[in-house]
Image (cartoon, rainbow, N blue to C red; front, side, top):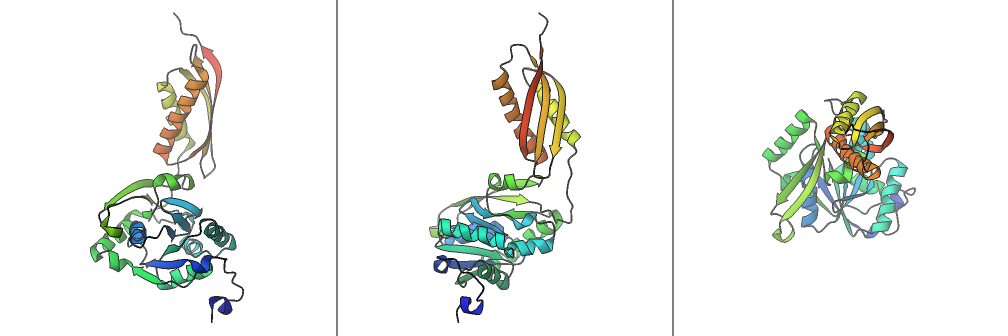
Length: 291
């Protein structure tokens, strides 16, 4: 009896029945995401499903990380693609990119099978377990970091997910391994985050901090004589900044203001981990230095 016969209401997307499905299974916090690309590379797999994300090579092409969920329960539901809109986004990506094979990450055989079923994928053909690719000592170290520091790994470069993780602690993690398909050198960048539901709690940045950073940067900027006004709107996904300044006479206004905005945006995002969604600088007055 086919999957469609067993589940008559399940709509299997056209073409997904040709995808060869692999699984990578291991308990939470033992280093699956850290090693996901290595496992995929050894089997010539370009697509990975991990915690709600569909990843092609080093790029997120669909989905939203389950690690953004507010609770552990919501995280599990999101990772399993329970909601129809979550499923449809991934299925749409399948139709667009037409993967020949895919690697699904999960904490148990039942979990990866459930993900495959929910997305209308064929039966899993091969499963790799974390114990096949990591030592007990390596898994214990990974687990200790998860428990004591609340850090998780996402198998894509930091710049790929930064826009989606405004306000989260993000660190790049570069990996070089000689083990890979054909024993070729394997280089990858992954990202470390601390999820919303971490027992270590959230961190909050006061608007005063943004103002102080901006004033400090403005004081160092050539052509800006004085900051008259700063308004910061923090809406969770990022911040919007509005400021009024007095400029020095002779200052190249457009070029100088744009250069200041770029430098300030980069520094604010680096220091606060918050994305600057909009940055408006208005020149209100001109200062003429005494000769």
